[in-house]
Image 1 (cartoon, rainbow, N blue to C red):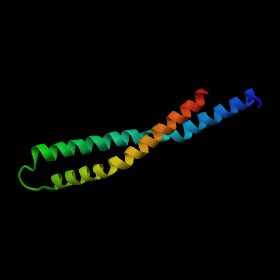
Image 2: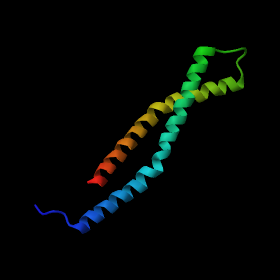
Image 3: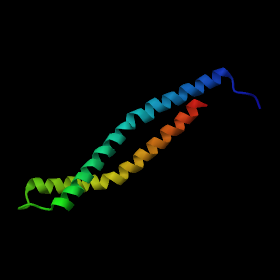
Image 4: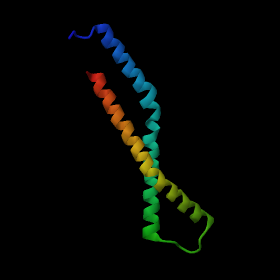
Length: 98
């Protein structure tokens, strides 16, 4: 089997770099969204378990509970997305280093 030519190596590297630039970098906001959702979920969990409800049920407290519930639903979805993004980035990095 013949070795790949330099032209083919350059073209392959350019295609991999373009794929990384077009697919991975714009989706890195997923990591920030996961961080925000996890922080909100943890803050809500601690607030509701440690402090309980003080006084009456208010609109702000109800909104807080809904936000924590939404963050709790987003955490598993964003975890899967962030993990897939990370593994894809690592795979592209390995291919680029060859």
